[in-house]
Image (cartoon, rainbow, N blue to C red; front, side, top):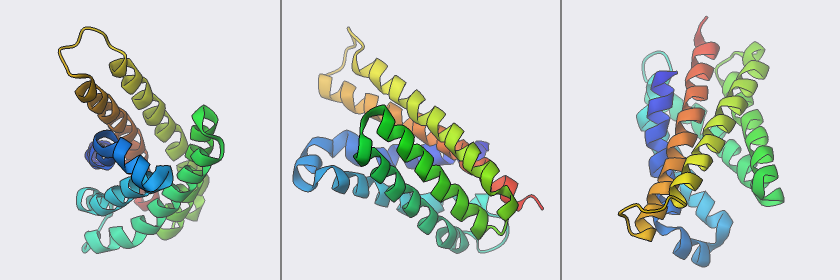
Length: 185
């Protein structure tokens, strides 16, 4: 769990960077879905380098990418679809749920642990939601904090990065538990 939480926090900070640093121009240039797609590509590219040790055995980097890329891509599409369908908290909840179903289902299947499917979906949903909404709270708190010796745009970038820290820690903890549960035999 610790390896997943700390590792995916690093991945998440990098994955949130296009939104936090270049969000406005990218949004105008390629739209909301395009911006989220760029973030997803960063997540996918870095995840194996940082998290492959969650997978037991030799050759874990290649095997991790073969397993995780389609599962996280499905999670990303489901989350983006849920968010774009409803927006706001309702869209977040829908995206988090659909994402957990896709990610948990595909990881349990890929790790040959079908009996773990419902448990890992629940674990991923709860921990991902805790990290996502906790990170959102941190982002809102810093975004509206008064009297900080920071330029407004720097404060905004740091606030958005804090959201990535919360999200990464929550989903990463869920990933760590998922890999452990599905491989413990």
